[in-house]
Image: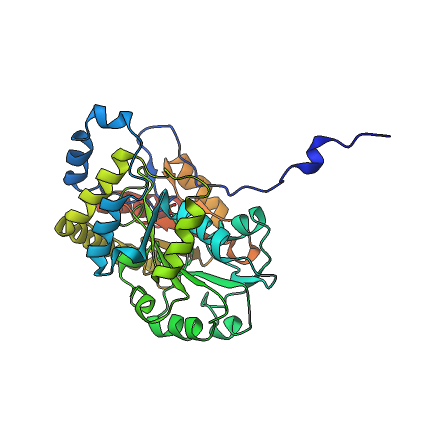
Length: 356
Ligand SMILES: *Cc1c(COP(=O)(O)O)cnc(C)c1O
């Protein structure tokens, strides 16, 4: 009898492709929605104060100090906070914990491109609901009975935000499943759905320190939900890896939360630069959905996106281009950098377009 190859029993997946992290110096990096400003100086201080001796020991598996800091910041009980290694970890754990139905999980067709990867990894059935022509989520697409719902607000890569009432209707209509709202970019000017977690036990709001808190390198994400949801999530985490977050990162996270003044100042700076960039891009013939995030998803009226992408790259400016789905192939996602970086971006785009 012929033996089957072991490859038959392998879990085969197509992985998520993260944005490029070029090794070359002196580039302008506007391709992964990182914050152009460093984290609060208190973060550096906290990291330098972690004693070498403390690294002998395992970190706190319950991450009590960070959980408490986040709970206090949002004025919620600590039993309602879960933390993880970036929101990717929190989201993956949430998919594993909550999406166990035979019915499909629903999410938009144009959205964070990790959702379908996790669904495939965990063998969760899913249906992608097309955004309308102005890249808005159609509420009517989320009425059917389903195995779960996940939507970013604002959505990525479009930057379009919906009001809390929009999500409340969806959450209230789905007691049979968990609704995850991914608020990776909410700090840049849209309204949070966190207070829905006071009223509904089936909604989980996921946040990250990577964008608004300028700590993508630390990997801190968290979720807020009912104590029951958080308990289920913790049970799965402790069945997988007890020590997700390291001692240094836990200290850094607490310090970031402590410096609210710095946080707000830098958010305001990014928002002001975003609004300036919108005006400039408009005047150069770009159109884009109105972004409430730290990026702009823009299409030029006549010049091909890949051409602009390549020309910018030659000039040391990295933006992001998605070739799929096809209807976004004409768009570039441009993260908001410092004023100086955005001025250089605009100057270079003018050269590429041949505009004086
Ligand atoms: C960046 C991003 C994340 C992941 O953030 P990390 O906390 O760095 O893992 C999650 N969701 C969306 C929509 C994002 O854009």
